[in-house]
Amino acid sequence: MAPSPDHEPVLTASNLHKTYRGGLLSRGGAVRAVAGVDLELYPGETLGIVGESGCGKSTLARMLVGLERPDEGEVAFRGRPFFGRGLSGGGVPRDIRRRVQMVFQDPLTSLNPRMTVHDIVAEPLRVHRLARDARAMRDRVGELLELVGLSPDRMHRFPHEFSGGQRQRVGIARALATEPDVIVCDEPVSALDMSVQAQVVNLFAELQRTLGVALVFIAHDLAVVRHVSHRVGVMYLGRVAEMGPAAGVYGAPAHPYTMALLSAAPVPKPRLRGRSRIMLAGDPPSPVAPPPGCRFHTRCWKATDRCSEVEPALEAVGDHYAACHYAERPPERTPSPERTT
Ligand code: SF4
Image (cartoon, rainbow, N blue to C red; front, side, top):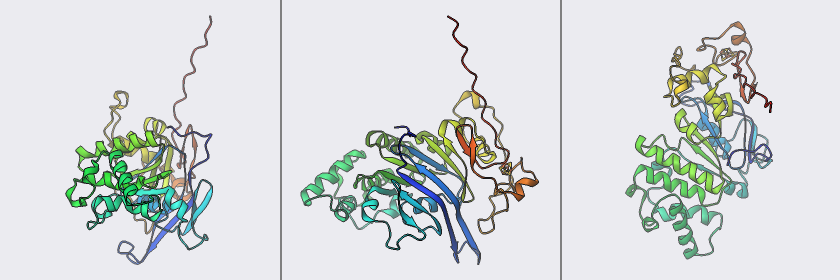
């Protein structure tokens, strides 16, 4: 299902900030992992989030499901704030925890090796009291395993007896157990072999279509995100650089960083082939000391003095949003000639 502006967002993040202090990477400073992110997720849509490693995607994912408390800002489920600074310290309310689930990056470490697949998938059913007895629980676990393409006959085996792709399917079955409205998927295929990635991505697309669950799909691979997403957000150093419908962002990127990422990715459309590759200077700056003004200015070939002094806001550019003083406007659509007969 494509997102519909007629619907209220199912999940809203407002002005999320997260800074880590005293960690190994901070070297005595403060790592500003997420620095003012807003997003809305609509019922039945997939919102892809892409960016280089260290851009804050995973911290954002953990804040969206209530695993990481923001320093500022809040997260709301169907308009009801449930997690953020100033809200109750008691964690995410149980009814919302049921509705917002997560699939983790590495199925090997996210599944308890001492539990059988039955017990792993049954755990949320038990916690949320969603099965009346052991038999109902076993039947439901079997249904969930079938839904993700695994045989229920294998429910009494342990995670190490499954392949990486199958283990990720177990993680997806566990996330689906509570019939969530939202699943936040944090790099769900990046730990898998290339040959298996497509199968798992197709499974997400299929589940999204058949169950109508809304997905936040986080990845560093642009091709993966494009395949499953209705809308895409591009993150750079803890902020959103560009966000909009996937066709608009991939077809006519407005932000120089998006252009650079796309120019380095394989291009399926013949009309876009031949675009020259944009080589970015250097590595992303440290999130301990992000550059003033536009965070991208130290690597941007379009930067001017204004860019190093004034931070650009995320503003509408055609049908999407970009945080750039000199964002490219999408080409005007040529109006169809009027009929004369
Ligand atoms: Fe580049 Fe300036 Fe735009 Fe930042 S604001 S992306 S530095 S042109």
